[in-house]
Amino acid sequence: MAHPVDVHVGQKLKQIRTLRRHSQTDIAQRLGLSFQQIQKYEIGSNRIAASRLFELAQIFDVSPAYFFEGVNGANDSEVTPCNTSTTISKALAAIEDETVKTRIVTFIEDISGMAVGRQG
Image (cartoon, rainbow, N blue to C red; front, side, top):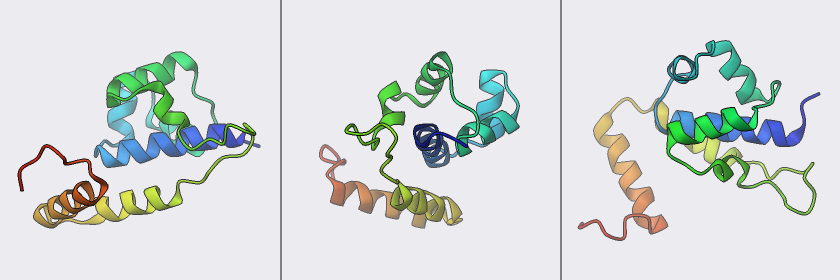
């Protein structure tokens, strides 16, 4: 049975991969792996080695700590689910109209405060 932290890290990998619009094959090729290995990472059935996690962080231009965001620090075996983020990522990826997708992303950035320096 997969450890909850491995499952969480895999979910974070899938989340950022989907948000950045990369396929499992794209990431696998950059790492010299098969897409099946990326699938196993994403479901948590295979652990991601620290060196591989570092490479993934470089590919996505995030801190390695990104993959652990949401893990409950009080008990490492408990993981805070990121179902809302995953659901939003999947829904956004399913939108085919790029103009609509861009408007939604802009809206989310505006209400989250991420677009502070952007002129509207």
